Length: 133
Image (spheres, rainbow, N blue to C red):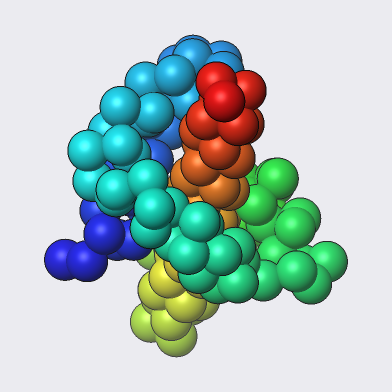
C-alpha cells in the first residue's frame, strides 16, 4: 500500500468519528507527518488533488452522497418488496442493481470526502510550516 492509499484510509477512519472538521484535521496532522515526510507532502497533495474529479456530479456526490444514493436504495427496496409479494423473480434484479448502485455512490462519495480531508490537512500543515519561519 503506497503512501497516498494509507493517507486516504486514515482519513476514512477519521470520517467515522463524530467530530468537527478542525478536530479531524488536528488528529490527522501527526499521522500525515509520520506517513509522508514534509518535503514530499506537496507532491502528494498535488497527486491527490488531481485525482479528485471537478465535475458537478462529483461535487454533489461528495457533499450529499446519501441524498444521491437514496433513490437507488428505494428502487432496491421496492424491487425486493414486489419480488416477494408478487412472486416476480425479475424484480429481484432491480434489488441487486439498486443495492449495487447505491453502495457504489456512497462509497465513491466517502472516498472523495476523505481525499478532500487529506488535502485540507496538507494545506493546514503547509500553512503551519510557513508561519513558523
